Amino acid sequence: MGGFAEYVCARESALALKPASMTFEEVAAIPQAAVIALQGIRDKGQVQPGQKVLISGAGGGAGTFAVQLAKSYGAEVTGVDNTGKLDFMRSLGADHVIDYTREDFTKNGKQYDLILDVVAHRSAFAYKRALRPNGSYFLTGGSVATIFQILLLGPWIRGTTGKNMRILAVQPNLKDMVHITELYEAGKVIPVIDKTYPLSEVPEALRYLGEGRVRGKVIITV
Ligand SMILES: NC(=O)c1ccc[n+]([C@@H]2O[C@H](COP(=O)([O-])OP(=O)(O)OC[C@H]3O[C@@H](n4cnc5c(N)ncnc54)[C@H](OP(=O)(O)O)[C@@H]3O)[C@@H](O)[C@H]2O)c1
Image (tube, rainbow, N blue to C red; front, side, top):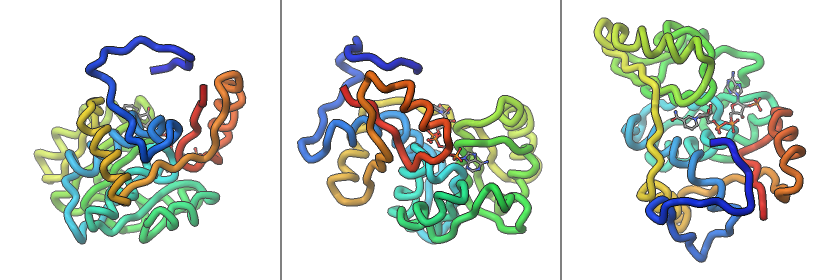
C-alpha cells in the first residue's frame, strides 16, 4: 500500500512465479486489480450465466478485469465509466455501457443481479434501487460516507428486502494470482496496460493517472 521502489522485502509465501508466457509488465497489473475483480465476480458475486452484472469503474484497473471475468462466466455486462472509455469498455466485452458524466445508473429504472463498485459515492438507497430482488451490491472503494452507509445500513437492507449490500474486503492471496495467470494462458483474461513509465518518472505517472484518461493500468518499470 503506497510505495514505489527498486527493491522490496517480502515473505517467500507472498510470491508467485511469473509464467513465461507473460511479461513483467503484464503480471505487475495483477496482484491488486485482478484479485479485487476475481473476488468480486467469482467468490462474492458467484456470477451465473445470463445474470445481469454492472461494473462501476469498468474502465479502470480492477474494472477491466471484472468486465472480462463476468463475460467469461456468461453474464450480461454493463460497464460504467467516463465518456472517453465507452468504446474501450465495449472492446473488453461489455454488452452495455453507461457514461457516468451523463447518466446515473441508479436512476434509469434498470436493475442488476450484481453490482461491483470500485468508485462508490451515492447513498445506500440509490444502490438498493438498482438491485433486482435478491441481488447483491459489493463496494470495493469509494467515499467514506458511502462506505459507512453500507456498513451501517447494509444489514438492515438485507434483513428487510433480501438485497445483499456489503463491503468487499479483498484478501490478497497467491492462489488467486496464479488463477489469473491461468485464465490469461487460457485466453480468457488479459491485463490492460495503458502506459508504462520508468521508476524515475513516477511523478509523471501519478499525474497521468490523476487526469482521468487511463484505460486499465499504469505500470512502473525498473
Ligand atoms: N476493498 C479492498 O479490500 C480494497 C483493496 C485494494 C484497493 N481497493 C480499492 O479498490 C478500488 C480499485 O480501483 P481501481 O484500481 O480499479 O481504480 P482506477 O484504476 O482508478 O479505476 C477507477 C475507474 O472508475 C472511473 N470512475 C470515476 N468516477 C466514476 C463514477 N462516478 N462512476 C463510474 N466510474 C467512475 C475512473 O474514471 P476517471 O478516469 O474518469 O476517474 C476509472 O476509470 C480503489 O477504490 C481502491 O481504493 C479496495
